[in-house]
Length: 176
Image (cartoon, rainbow, N blue to C red; front, side, top):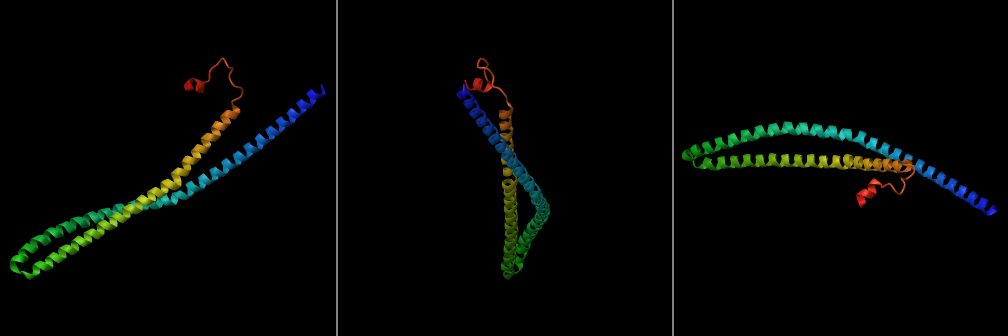
């Protein structure tokens, strides 16, 4: 009988220690989840200026695109006019033909510079977009995964007793 009392006492002490450890672990887990939530809010608050800058950049790119389109149309018209004038000038003066060709080449170089500027601006916009995706969307996705794990863990802890053996679990039915 004394052995039984000693064994029951030891088991009660072990059970108490287990519950204390579970409580401390849960408190640490809740604290860590709070820290992660704080970090996520910090990241979301800090990405707002980046988004505003990106929106400003898009507006500037739209404006620049309109100017570049107008410039390209003007350059195209100028190029066509230069060709016509070059034909007339060629018939009148042989030396001025070379001068007109140089002007057309300069115009083409300017168009190439404009195109290069557009390419650089597009690359910078794509880099900004990739940065926003890395720094905002990926941490938000990870936070979602953590919250799902926390919810699932709480569901398991709060689930209570298991169903009797003669009743099938949905997971088991899907497995079979």
